[in-house]
Length: 349
Image 1 (cartoon, helix red, strand yellow):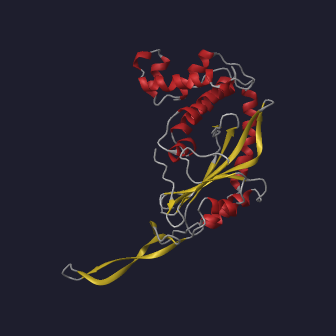
Image 2: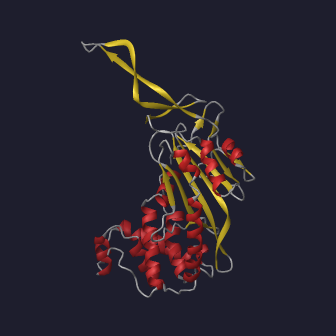
Image 3: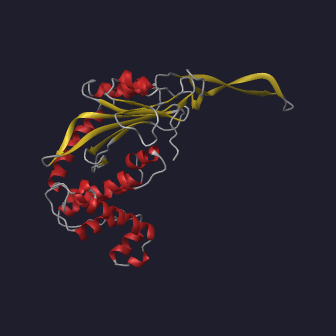
């Protein structure tokens, strides 16, 4: 698998850090204690600045011959990493660089710098994209002992592609299972464009903390209710099948019992998720065994712990930023909501 973690030839280190546990790629610095934002910046090799520099192109005479004179491009600039001199991208004149230190300052600002724990951070490629994960001090508690940690993710780039994106996701302590429940009429992330107001908007992005507080309170209430709703094994299998449906045709085949028309790949996905629901040790707790909360976890657990991804970045995109995992998880959430009310929803109407 390609990890894409930046390797800094100046210091001979990969630009990544993790607290206590190695990532799957085994690269970067592993530290014992949660660092401050300044320490995290240094441990991850993100303590570099990015600048915009002029671009030049050839100047041609009337005969179409290139001349020694170079003409400056006035509409675009190159983004340059100052410590290595690497060109990270080409951006428009209105593009504003958000330095790595400012990305960390975002997290410090929204919680006042108290209690936040930086778990991982790093840079990809030549340093054109960075990512940060930070754990918040409060938990969502389901039942007496099933704890769900609350995480913030942030990613930004220096190459002109993509927005500054910060997202909230709760994670079950017992299985590192991302419970990406995007409730109706809410979003679990914010996106900020690299415009002239980008830094101002970044400083004001404490609204993500408001999203976090709203979602965590609602999810705690919902998950505790679901942990008391009983569901049979056949009903769990049906919920998984409907949540994993890739299109209406497959959904209709399920509704009419045309199992022979279902693809082998779809059947394997459903079987693997059902196997996770029935046999994984994290599914044997009082909150999950035979409960609607456990059924929901069978879908989220499949995408977090069973499905194979090209790399960690692909996994993160799928889970958090509108990918297949997030779409299927939202279906599962909607189906569980309707099951609690006494029926399965029609996910395609």
